[in-house]
Length: 263
Image 1 (cartoon, rainbow, N blue to C red):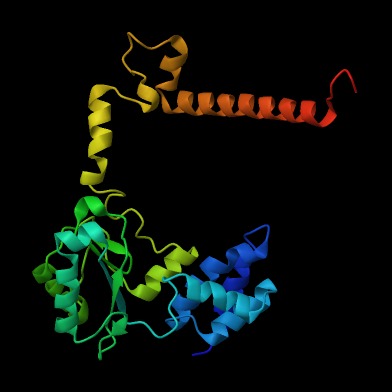
Image 2 (tube, helix red, strand yellow):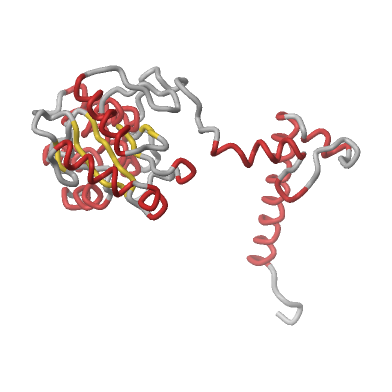
């Protein structure tokens, strides 16, 4: 599959978003995957040409990060967390059950091309262990049985949603989103699950804020009260930052132009 003129133009568009074009390499590689199903040699060479890099430099990035694949992926990528907590909670059992059910090994794709299975070191969702992802969307509190049911639904083409609400599309479509293109699904489901927000809820109920300051009116100064509103907090943050930058600038000037009286 050859990269289309449209995709090449989009790669150039990504490069143009950055003061230093080479900073766009990571989303450019995701865009290549969305178009071709993996990071192809053509994709490497095209990115290198656009960015003024060598193919070896681009390949070095593409082989360093595990989200970049060097062989064709399935319609869906299923990643099972096998890091410590998920493993203890059943992640290893889930991975072994899916290997047997799908008749694939780690980082292999089913014969029908629907599922690529991979063990993931950490999905950063330990409060929902064991977890797996489908095209980078979370599926929390999984069991071997629920994981088998999930992949069967994906293979049969049923509509599947993450427990957090997001509708599952395809791995290529997800890669295009990571590259920077909207799919119109950003507002489906919460941005964080209930368990992840328990600490915030407790803090709000007790009036706790960072640094231990109380948000109750009796303890707040006039300045602190202003900060309880979103606009007031933003104003205070901007003021504090400006003051700190002034101190740094003054300090720098003193260092550069200063000296002891003995000089």
